[in-house]
Image 1 (cartoon, helix red, strand yellow):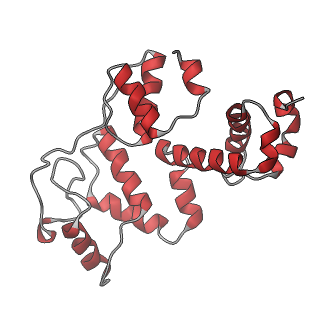
Image 2 (spheres, one colour):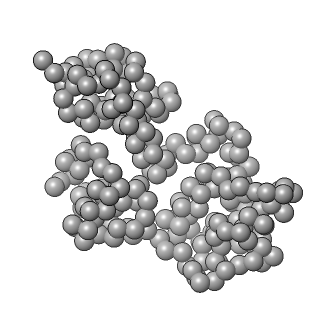
Amino acid sequence: MDLAAFKTHYYYKTDLIALCRQYQLPTSGTKADLNQRLDAFFSGRPVRQRAESANRGQKLTAAQLTLETPIIGSGFAFNAAAREFFAAYFHVKHFRFTKSMAVYKRQVDAKKDQTATIGDLIRVYQETKDKPAAQRAFLANNPEEQTYQWNNFVRDFFADPQTAVFHDRLKVAAILWQQVKRSTDAKVYRPQLVTQYGPLIAQYRRP
């Protein structure tokens, strides 16, 4: 398999894990991690493994956490102690971690950014909490979020009865997805896309 062949197919996470095993690559991480790992492998780039949390055995209490606590290398984790710390900081009874916080932490882990702190997590929380536009902007260039959007796009494309007239439907979905990605529209499948981009996918219609 080469990069072109890899990019033209849709894979479930189990498929990606199987490919990683086939090419003796690490199989840990999210679906986005696996996609990036295989993309790098087929492109001839060094394969970066998913960062492991340093000092995994060390656990910090809420009292030990501060705004200056590093996100990696300190023993910090999204656990009961962190929840207690954030609840006290924001003066709320119950605190819920947000998707943006989780994504930011994974970015820090992947980059091994020793300078990122709990204070930065709080900034991300404040800038995106209950602000849909800000959260979309924050997640826009995140590989994991893009994989999630693509998965939903493909699912909804195949669920649309009008797409049954195409052969190689995954290829058609990919063509439409590229158009949506380049646009300012929401990154979701809509039945109108089949008509809007009809000339681009006409060759895939069954006779």
